[in-house]
Image (cartoon, rainbow, N blue to C red; front, side):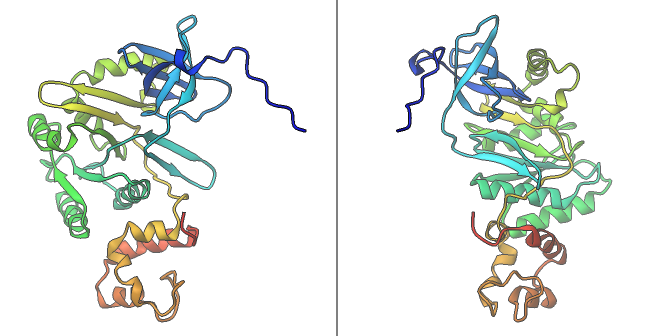
Amino acid sequence: MAKPKKKREDAIPPAELIGGLVTAGHGRHYVVTTDAGERLEAHRRGKKGDVVVGDRVGVTPPVSGVAAIERIEPRRNLLYRSDEWRIKSLAANVDLVAVVFAPRPTFNPWFIWKALLAAHQAGIPALVIRNKSDLADNAEAADAECARLTAIGHDVVAISAGNDPEGARRTLIPRFTGKTVLLVGQSGMGKSTLLNALVPHAQAATREFSEALDLGKQTTTAARLYRADMDDWEGAVVDTPGFQEFGLAHLSLNDILRAMPDIAKHVEDCRFFNCRHLQEPGCAVKAALERGDIDPERYAFYAALAPLADTLPQ
């Protein structure tokens, strides 16, 4: 007969834990903002690394200035990217994913599409933000991408957070109010400028987060959540480090197709029910591509992801 597990003697009863929100994280070091508004440095007990910015948690009263995260509340959602070696969580309990791109530095459409696929799989609405709309350089490519995304059915807005911060606020605040918004984008797309336009105290908060997490100047490696409690809007913005790749190793083939309606609408006419729309005979998707009914670059994107995807729904 199995012996019952012993309770850890130093375990804290749930009623004695302090409730709060994880507002910054780096490695296994976190900042938790309590429901009373106090900012605590916190560590996850043991060697667990399962805490994410945006998590609701229960922490112990701090000892020597450091609290221990004992409990993670159930999440509404979790956005992450992955490759064959690891999973990188970005944020939890998000209401909107805002994918930011700009004409310069040169943007990668596939990055935008991957972020939109990840948001769709996580069940989170998405908004595409074209920043630096005042730039003439590479504007034609940015305009074309906005038109393509709009035609597919995505919500797209154009702003210039650097040259017209008030205009950016007028465009985004109605969409952001009452929500926790996750900003994602390649490096150099102006996310920091956008963040400072939306949450003017963000720079000061960043310095406090960096000190608490002992990051020095390496603030780009840490995700951070900034509360907006101002006259014209209330909500929160989660800023993530800029990165160049958005891995989708966790997506199934069905996940990919559900998030690509421009491809999926042709699937029903395929000869075989298990067609992967690559080299199979009688493929309606390939036929639509040959007729010009599917954007060749969008199909190339699908064809790059499909061979790596699990065929079973997840």
